Image (cartoon, rainbow, N blue to C red):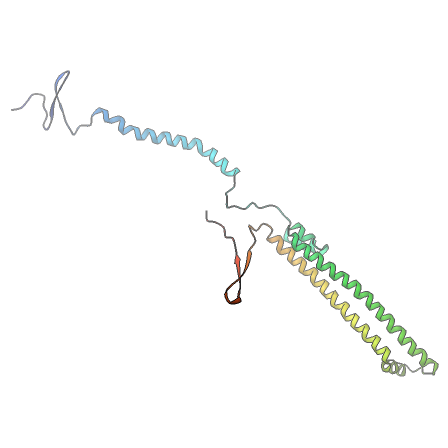
Length: 230
């Protein structure tokens, strides 16, 4: 028997207004705020993110990343090379390689000192040769020998003149060797200052480790820092 006011599949409920039917397929009005609540929360989160984003971007510009290395302005490689050529150690000091600069200052200073000393010895040997040759020429002049070939033969045969000439040749060779070494050290200092200027902003130097192993072996290891991934 059909009941008035009832729908198919409905359930009769008693209320203040009498009997009413409820269809389970129908969404009750109380569920509507539940559907709108996630949408409202998403809108609020989007507004908050839009307000915080400019401040976060400004803070990121002011504070560098932890794995970044600040690049400081320094001398150019060409400028370091010219400085090292002009004055020993100047190019290395400009490239902040003070230890290497001190080494080249000491090396080039020692080379210059040896050049001055060898030059003085060469002058002494030359004067000694001239004195001994003059003695032989005087003796030949007393005997009436004026032929240049005979005089040169007598000088070559004289033992004291030969030793003086040999000493002078040795001093001349030493002076030329120190001169070549001095030029080489100047060019080497310039090249090293050039490289030091290229590496003046390198993050960290390579570390060498030397330790003793088994059976008296010596182990040498190198530690190179690598940049961390972002």
